[in-house]
Length: 209
Image (cartoon, rainbow, N blue to C red):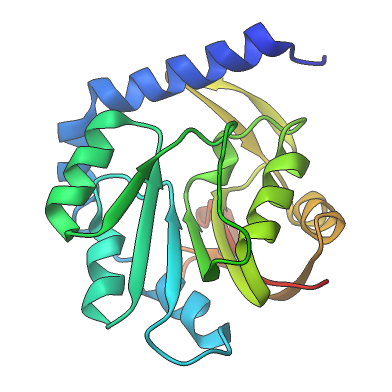
């Protein structure tokens, strides 16, 4: 079923409201999450020299902005939740843009890399090709996109107050390749567990064209 403008506005407003209402508990609950494997996967594929310009898409309260800055890079955060934007600015001292994912306004060829950790799954599948094109355009030539999403059987809908889409690897590959990316690697998380206990699909992509 195709979503109309009213449906999309509702998806955005209710999902952001969920995060806004739980901002403090979300920050506390995710503060110590170890995503060093994901950060390393992004950085090792970027061909430029440090300091790198990195867009932390869906930066939340700013945990990973702090990490990128501590590594000597120039991260910029982006989030649609007002409390997260304020928290990320205060926590990291970085520039943080307040934008929602369905209405991105990104500078062309600005970033060496995009870190999209646990964020792109919130975008309805019909809108994802357009959003991926926006991300492609804001990367420098041969720039790198990292994404990590909860995986599934290509279903989408509401889940505990948030809208989500849950792609399998084949569908995710098709979407990214159609948007002008080539795959560099993928893996499942958390590390060291049987596949049925690894709900997260992480993948790394290079901009081509």
